[in-house]
Image: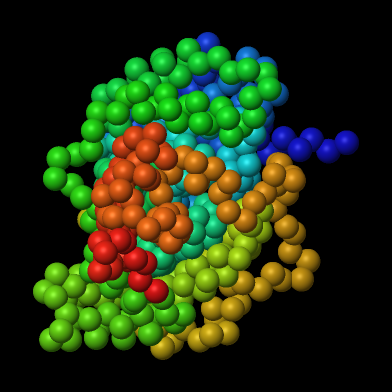
Length: 464
C-alpha cells in the first residue's frame, strides 16, 4: 500500500528548527521560525506542518490549533520563490519539476487548512504575503494586528495569486479581490479586517494572553465546529482593545465605487481604459484622479502575461470550489514555471540587490493573445491531478464567514430591506446581532454611506 505521507518525510538539508510546535493544555501552536528570512515558507517547513496537523486532527486532546510567526516583522512573507527561480535558471526542466513539486506540497497544506475539521486560528502579525496568505486566509479565524501587512504581490514577479487566491479573492466584496490581485496593493493593520481578509483585530501585545486564555477553553464532546468557533469568537472579543484612532476603512466611499467600476471589466485593456478615464475626467474628484494615476503606474510595472492570466483566474475562480481551486492552480503554476517571466521577475525583484526592473516577455498587453492566456488553463493530456489529503469537506463559499467576519454588503442589504428603520437603528441592530463585535459599526456605516439613502420619512432605503 503506498505511503500517502512519503512526500512529507524529512529530507537531507531540512532545518530541524524552522518550525516549532508547542502544547498548552488543549491548544497546539505552530510557529514559523525563520525570522531572518521573514519566515518564508519552504519545503522543509511544509513537510513538518502537514503530519502535525494530521496528528492533531486525530487527537482528542488537541482542541485548537494556532499558527503564528517568529520575530517582530513577519507572520510569513511568502513562499521561498527565490530558491525556485535559481533552481530553474540553473537546472532547466529538472528545476521546473522540482518547483512544481514544491507547489503541489504547498497547495496540499493550504487545502488541508481550508478543510480542517478543528478550530484553526492564524495570527497575521506582521508581513503576510504569498505563501503566508495560504497558511492563514483559509482559516475560519484570522486575527489582524497593528503590524499586519497583507498583499498578494505575484503579478510583480511574473507569477499569479496562487495558494487558493482563485477561491478567496473573487469572494471578497465587490471587485476588491480583483483589485488586490492585479495591483498587489497592500492592506495594513485594521484595513485587513475591513476588507474581509481578517475576521478579528486586536493589538499584538495581547496575543500571548489570548493564547493562554484559549488554552483554558473546554468544549463539550457534542459541540460541533461551528459551536466551538462561536465560543472562540466571543473569547477573542474579551481582548478587544479598540480600533486604531482615526483610521476608518480606506477602500471605502468614492474610492470603493471607483474600484468596483474600473475592475469589473473582463479584460485588462478595459480596466486600463476605465482607469485612464477616471484619471483624465474633469468630473473625477482629485482623490480618485490621483488613485487612478498611481494604479495605472502599478499595473504598468507588472508582467502583462501575469495580469491577463490573473484576471481570467479571478473570473473563473468565482465558480470553483476549494478543491478545484487548488487543483487548477497546481496546473497553472506548472505553466508559469516554464514561462520566462517567472525567473526574470523573481531575479529582478527578489534576487538582485538592489532590485531592478524586470524584463517581461512579451512586454505589452497587446503581445499576450487570448490563446496565450487560455493555454494556462488547459490541462494537458496525461497531466496528473493534485492528490489532496482530505475529501468530502470542500465548499463553494466559506461556511463560517457570516458568523465570524464583519457584515458583508448583502447582510446590510437584508436588514435594510426587511426593516423600515432609520440609519441609527440599522447600525444598532447589526451591532447587537454581532454582540458588539469590534469593527461592525464602522463597516455598516461605510456600506450605508455608499449603498443606501434616506426616504422622506427618514427611513433607510437601498440603492439598486
